[in-house]
Length: 83
View (spheres, rainbow, N blue to C red):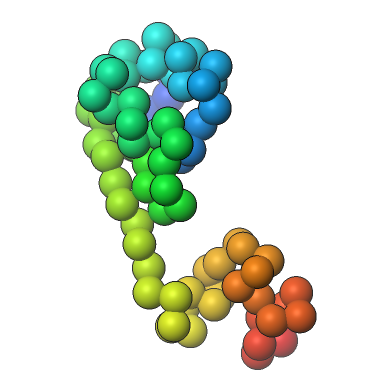
């Protein structure tokens, strides 16, 4: 399924999953560190035949971050402050 996809976003993956992705998508050992024990917001994109590493670090002290976060610890009382 992944080998037929034109666009795949890969974030932190477990060991067995990394091996399957590497085999199926042709990810090199060098590129594997982007999805193996990756930090939050770091990963690897597959777009067509290209593999592109990314780092998406967003300032936590912004209103936009508060709207986008999926981390319960970043939400006050389990809800966004404005709601």
